Length: 209
Image (cartoon, rainbow, N blue to C red; front, top):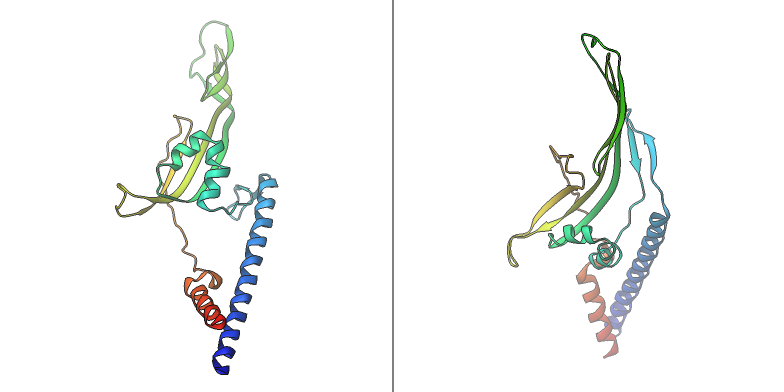
């Protein structure tokens, strides 16, 4: 009986260690989320020589995503509802701008004139200047909000789940021409393995007996 008690105590000690590690993980995740909530977009020049926008990422479960994000964003909720399970959500705003686009005429129009104006629509805006030499477009702008959702979809309740990435643009003039999506499968942390907690529970019940 003493030998059994020794094994049981050792198992409970290991389970306690696992529990402490799990609590540390949760605390660390909470700190990371607080940092992500208060973070702002930063820009840096990457190794390709282009500019990258960067921000810290929230780590949430499906329930938290629904509570914190989709309930406050009807459009995001509608897009997320197309998935059986949501793995990640990215939503970002862009404003494509071109300062000046000169369009000179090959031959000058045989009269002197000048017309200026501006066009402002929901999905594009620009200013223009036209004279006998040509047309000049300036401050051309295309605002857009893109939503990227990765998760599993199924055609019916018991259907096969397919890992899918959806990209939705608010601007109807923006078209996605190619998508390459990869999700890295991470191993389950040792303190989350079901058999570990089962063993700890069995050991605890034996010790009580």
